[in-house]
Image 1: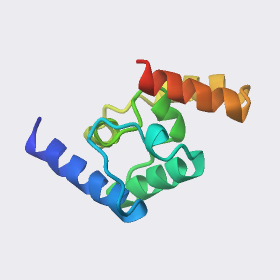
Image 2: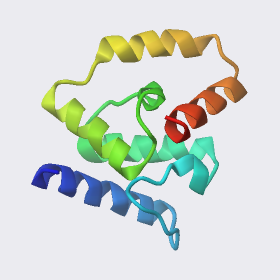
Image 3: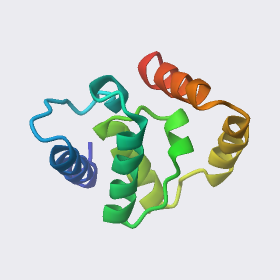
Image 4: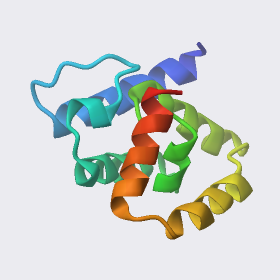
Length: 114
């Protein structure tokens, strides 16, 4: 882990602490397992995007765990310019035809089960 990655994880952890006072979590804990609330998950991503001046879409979480470490990896990829916009767009196209329940199940499966 680089110094930048550790710093990114620390900053994202602080965003989580501010939104969920008293919540105990580790770097690899999935937000859906902790708060099971997609609105809060979207809020967290929005705050992370604002904090880091990124524009990571929620669909990016279909390929990365929604954890502190997973978000930090997405932020680092975005900031390094290696974020795969085409992959995200193809995933967005796939999700557009899904119900909210199907999207939530897919996110949970991909972030928990691999």
